[in-house]
Image (tube, rainbow, N blue to C red):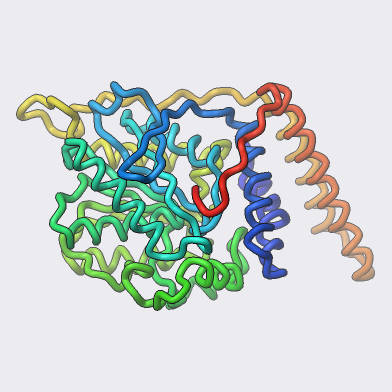
Length: 391
């Protein structure tokens, strides 16, 4: 396990600071590829089976037999324009473990090469494909994180309007539901959010929406019609800028008679479920798995047996991570330096800046040690570069 304080520090230095200069999409994708390579070395590669879903490339995670329990359509995030395939496969694998279901992971088209509605069209195609394949809606759940959560809501509203049957339930992890910037937490949580700034959200909006108005329900599902949607579960961080996008969405759903639940996690990074080393990740996925299995109906479920009782899903055991000693040393040194920095008065701004520089160098040194050690453990595998414009 790894401490949240350490994760917050890394994200503030490596990600949040990146947005300040208004980075080009190519630079953002280069950074995302580096992060995805680290995820591959830390978590290992996940076996997948490629599949074409109505012209949209996709991957199955989990064996075919798991589909008897049900199918989870997982729509990944990435600010609508980035792709971390190894990170998404690892989360899909964990979702498969906690639900016992087979997971379908479509690779929707990315902005800015393909702005809205391209990504939403691809995700709707994936859901229709599952229905056309004969998968019973009672055995389908949809889950999405960040941008994927936004797309999940878009798919649900589209399917209802098309007269398609609803899936059994849906899970939304920190979705964007209002691109107009109307959520108070966009401003109030800008400092506490370890990933984003208002400038970052503005860049995402410009890349993704193009000519689509921000208040269009296809972009901002908060302003869509919520009646007729299946049970919904939102997980969001209390310290992130998008917190109120989830809280307001839950209010709108409940006002329309939808069974909507929300769990607010105190002081966690945006979509922390992608960070498998955090203990809160396991807790969140356990709750998500319980919600999904409580609402989906396995194939050939005996009559009279409650939905939740028909599942025999065993949560995965916690494996000891081979880089724990390095992480522990890193956390110990970082914590000592932080306490020393907080306790000792520095007479000048220059000395304060020098101390911060020392902390950053320590952080970078231990990051390099982790990557080196884990790369050796996993044979130095490197992920393939994603094709531009498509996940």
